[in-house]
Amino acid sequence: MTATKTCAICGKPVPPRPENRSYPFCSDRCRLIDLSKWLGEEYRIPGPRAGDGADQPPAPGAEEDEPS
Ligand SMILES: [Zn+2]
Image (cartoon, rainbow, N blue to C red; front, side, top):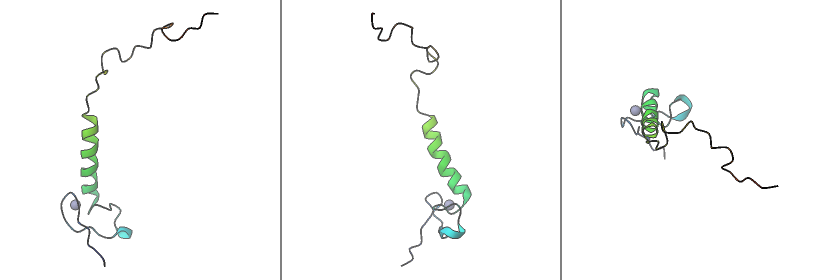
């Protein structure tokens, strides 16, 4: 009943969890490779507002201003 899990990065058998800090990967290296893949894709998402008025606060008075 013990299905051997294989590493999603390199395809090697993954050691069981208690002795494997990098589960579900075979090693810390593969875990980091997977992590950096995710982070890399995330960082690559283009920010349309970046660098163009991103630092400008909203103009005062532009929001709802209840007349008294
Ligand atoms: Zn691996």
